[in-house]
Length: 327
Image 1 (cartoon, rainbow, N blue to C red):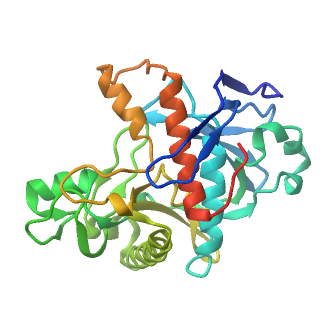
Image 2: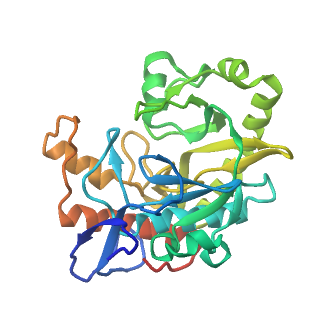
């Protein structure tokens, strides 16, 4: 039960052990999915597909719920513990990448939060970050080391991605000669982000900042990709969000999670089609199988799909951080 009025969906699940690909065994426990936070009089600024955003004096509070979306709709069923996994993974990456760019984190320790927030510890523990306010850049900063997704579709149509010419003969899932920066616009209201050229990015944020965002994006990707490769994973692509404060550019939002990145099993990588991945593919496959029309209201998920998706997220966390996590 989530205290202080939090809305939760109870997913009663059997204890299970599973091995996914070359993963370590994962134990699934009884756990509650936090679908929506309720923090009393704390000003709520927005509810995104996953995160709830609150104003806390001169700072912001980001709370990652267990909501999951697919095909631009938030589903009726959450993935228990997903918000904790995303938050703890972001914290891991913030620490690992701090030598490249500072980030927005003030604290993730509820005991260090303002007193007004400590009343809601049960909703915040392990899944929240108190962060600095920043003026956010209106672009998603995407790095691609492999071609997939919207990049593959554009390449098939024009031989380019975001105006960058790529070699002929690439297949879906092919490794690129070198990582590329492929920015996208941020669209509100659940619409798909739209890939844009570097010149369009310069027009949005200015030439100097566009060049620095590209440099930072590729530097972050390169270090993260090396780390993932050492742990038997491929970081195919990922997106970053940056903001500006008085001291300069900072890294914000979530970082290198299965929601913002494509992680593939390196040992199973074979260009020419979809790759075994660590994301919500089980969810998308199920929704396609029931022939959902991708219109509201979004359907609920069966227990098996929830369980297998949770396992994927847990495995990605353990593989990348070499740590355990309590959900």
